Length: 247
Image 1 (tube, one colour):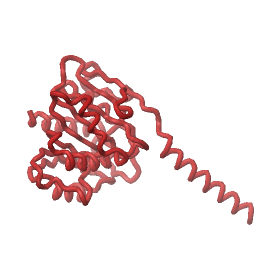
Image 2: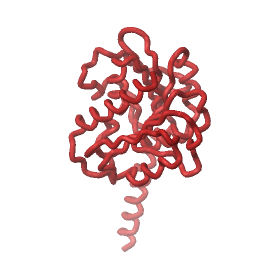
Image 3: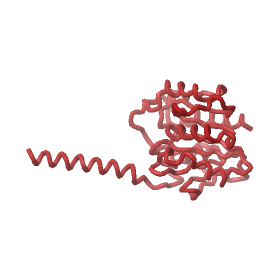
Image 4: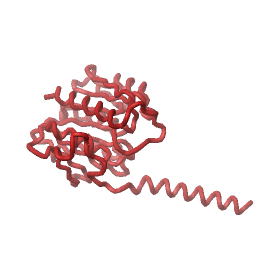
């Protein structure tokens, strides 16, 4: 009996150590893997830089960008999962910067956008965006720094209960994945009460939570009724239309 107890404790200890290690030791930050949008790889220049920490800088291959999009990744999601979006937007004159956060949690550095805007935002229209937890932190940044921004994009996200932008005039786009099993659609819709009255809510038909990035299936997520590529096309169209309306 004692041997079984010791074996069980050992297994439990190994599981806890492995889980903790997975949270602390994050996968390497690599650019260019599974990131090329349908339009092809030639529209963007992508570099890995250090501005208060690692950041993926995605800018038009030709000409200067007129818009800077600061993108906060979802919780425990590596920044390269959103490189596809930055590459696709580069053809529209958008520079996208996706920072890495300690433990891949945007809550550890909500004000990270300050350094990025100072480094890359001069002479540009600045929009902050985020997916899931990153979206909630982007909303908090927007609430604290409304004058620094021209817009806010939330992907499967909503402001925390103690954060409100309701009295702001900031343009906001909220994207809701119809089959999301992580950010409940009712919660995303409920978050509209803490966003400006003119906020645009766009439903991505048949999509799930993980379809906003390229990081594979996510525990607890719903079952999609469209392909990942179809969802990305809808997401890109909505973001492009929002950014175009700001010009």
